[in-house]
Image (cartoon, rainbow, N blue to C red; front, side):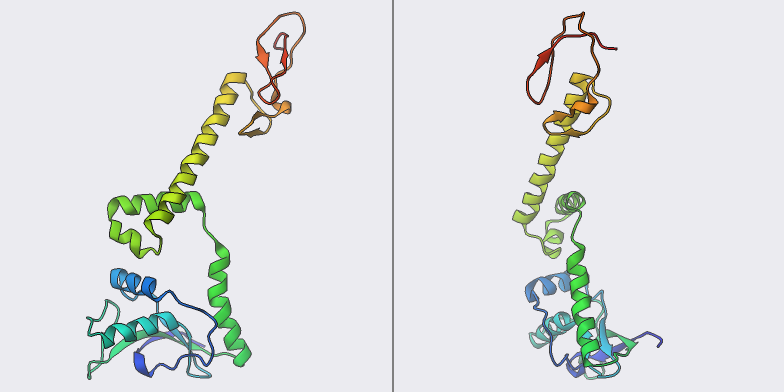
Length: 210
């Protein structure tokens, strides 16, 4: 079935009969106040009920009840009612199918996770540009700082591993924070004394590099 966007009066959009997802309403509101309503809700054509966007619906109804100005992306009806963008055209096959989609819609995002290094760098740059934007991401100052500390620690370990490579002349093998692995060592004869020492166990030996 073809998908399309329709603006619907928010109070007239029926919620799902059961929804297992909790919502951080304060974070959703901060996001809407900062960025506007970017993502449309979704309604099941079979039931006429909402299957995505319950948190946004609740926040928008609260904002209108408080007399707030409609955020960007929300339209006003002739009677002043707030109207939200809703994706139409999807029809569930059964109540179980509709509920499974609602859970999948949220669970698949949760399972994706984050690239911690990229996230830490992004939050650092966002904070430098505008601290209010950092708050709108849903991450606190403390959470962003913890991620940045972990990123700095990873960078320090990587630099230490590279220093081992340069110091011991290792051109191959596995590298980690303890130094180069044995398969990466150079080979030596026994006729020239050297000051080579294993970075892992401190064993010293003499020899001539081949």
